Amino acid sequence: MADHHRARIEFDPRFTVAEVPDRLFGSFVEHLGRCVYTGIYEPDHPTATPEGLRGDVLDLIAELGPTMIRYPGGNYVSGHRWEDGIGPKQDRPRRLDLAWRTTETNQFGLGEFITFCRTVGVEPNMALNLGTRGLEEALDLLEYANHPGGTHWSDLRRSHGHAEPFDIKLWCLGNEMDGPWQIGQRTATEYGRIADQTARAMRMIDPGLDLVACGSSSRAMPTFGAWEAEVLAQSYESVDYISAHAYYQPHGGDLASFMASAQDMELFIDGVIATADAVGAKLKSDKKINIAFDEWNVWYQDAPAPEQAEPWPVAPRQLEDVYSAMDAVVFGSLLITLLRRCDRVTAACLAQLVNVIAPIMTEPGGPAWRQTTFYPFAEASAHGRGTVLGVNADAPVLDTAKYGEVPALHSVAVANEDGTITVFAVNRDLESPLSLEIDAATLPAFTDVAVSTLTDADPHAKNTLAEPERVTPAVNKEVTVKEGLITVELPPMSWNTIRIA
Ligand code: AHR
Image (cartoon, protein in one colour):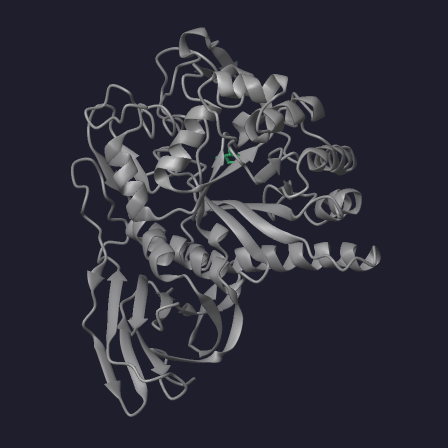
């Protein structure tokens, strides 16, 4: 395309990619920093519910719109003893958490998590400790959680005030078991066998479970590809998903590559699908393994850890990244990729939910507010439901050091159930606006085009306790409809939600 400031897309509601799975808008609560304590759970907070959940945070979670929440880790899960977090709170032990070098009080555990999920209206996704523990504890936990009654563990649950089973369908078989930082790291062969045995035994209790085997902790892992191939060679018929984790940040001031981070996510997804399908083909299996992208976000991993006054603190400030307008645009682009690939990425979790690399921040005893990244997630969860459409795009390209030439426009179209078509579009160009033309010839008659845009003249602008609404989306009135074309002006570095009703 000759014009460097003009892009064009076309789609046809008859040509679809896939239904958007409910589990695509998952999030993640780990016992890490202040995600649980003074994040979702703070019994002395002025807004606390009788169960000790922060009411102000519950309201923001409802607005954010997650559909499923993974718990209790993360790296934490590989040393977790689930029995510590059940029964009377005064009897629960305090333990060292080796993953994050803190003290875990266990005042919030499995029962509290299920109450939280039911209050918020999300599906629970439970991760198992396959680091320090194994098959037996996994079966005990499953029996405690899901068996109706009449056995040791299920009657114990009932005695703890939970007469109804928790009915947890989705389970992660460990976390990042390929990582040298993981307590109980395994080789692919060791882990594949443990995952297979655990999955088979769990299905003896409940054949209807959905089970996630650990894939690679990132595409940069030296074992990426070989890990998935070996783990799935061992467990293909007993699991449903293979996980993927990815976190992005700018490196060496290379903002153009950072803006194009979704390219890495695309390549990651391509690689995992190719590997999983190759294993399936070799096994002559009709089954497809899908991806649970159960940790994704922008994360400034190089940021120095805050000073700690004491060793082994309880719920210290850890990983409390404060996100900029630019981070939110990159974050939105990652969401676009998850939607574009939702034929095979059928579950995903934004890591994490509150305070820890999170869209929601809180002060202990004080307010809660929305980070910049809150908005793309909330808009995608609210308007990204229905059917993803195939999009043809013609856009100018940008040069990046890491990914070569990338299109300046990153977009996806979703046909919503009410007949609206929602286009999510990111302009990756940090300097230039982009005129986006949407070919309306193939669309049903429409009466309204509404556009919401998140951008900022200062790409580093952030929302903070002092200025919680510094960056918010605004109505974009730069829309024209003429001769079968809808034209929307996308500012530089912007996330845009275009609703054609
Ligand atoms: O989300 C933060 C951490 O990132 C998780 O505990 C771990 O699984 C990943 O490395």
